[in-house]
Figure (cartoon, rainbow, N blue to C red):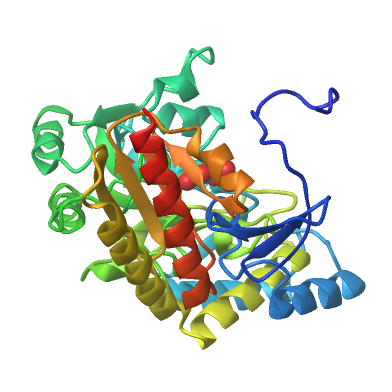
Length: 392
Ligand SMILES: Cc1ncc(COP(=O)(O)O)c(C=O)c1O
């Protein structure tokens, strides 16, 4: 254990030295199958040639100038990303939390410009939006917030998936200007909302003049079987945030907007020194082009369904197994008890997984995972889960 690092993470006893595709090797050269992608980041796997090429070529040409100058790769990425997302404009930052900060600032500007003195944003129980002060205040987890009071004001919280609760807020809270929601909750336990939920939010936002803000930081970039999860539905948000897999590991985040929301920021309203620099944008452009060129959302859907079906048939008769849920390659296995120890069990067998919300095994494999690797995930994990549940 290194004593120079602040103890913000309980780290697992492994250090990786290199990777290729869905495989990683540790410093002892032991091989692992990555079913987590650095928590939904390396959607193209490790050392993808298109990403490596873009990164190396750009590093040798120009890493950073400043947003006070034109940046050709930022413009090219902006055009590509807005076209893929069906949005009008984009602001680039460096992380998911920063993308959400931009979205929260847009909502406040939107409210203030209408003369609303204390504009409020509706957020959800069990949500996760980041670790900055505003985004942890928006996050629906006391664990994330505890000790950092006073929290940022201006958030109203309701249960996830509950349209009636949102409608009640619409009746009783005149200062609401926006709803901010994950299309599928990630950290909160891979929670898939009812099919009418996002369309219902869209309609309510239209009726009330609220901004619909989708946090696609975990669900975006083809993870759920569409380029963005909202594309499973016939709707568009007003504001959408993306990060994680946008740079396949090179830090970059984006806040996209359409319609009136796209025109809110003016010069001096927002900014970032590193945001949208040539290195990050060239890399993210290679990521976008690879995902769309290979239509990797289709692979996410096919391999994701294969894994979900495999897990379901291997585990459905086991006591303590509740359900497999998710969409595409965003998969949760709900057990009836806390199961954090499965992470070290899987690690010992060369499989990288995660447990979230105490009792949900979370899988976020790279989109380039092969059928054979998918089968390996299913067989290793289902026997681990069986043994774990039998041994309790
Ligand atoms: C849905 C969602 N929003 C925001 C974030 C925060 O992103 P970052 O850690 O890049 O700030 C995360 C990270 O897990 C996330 O899953």
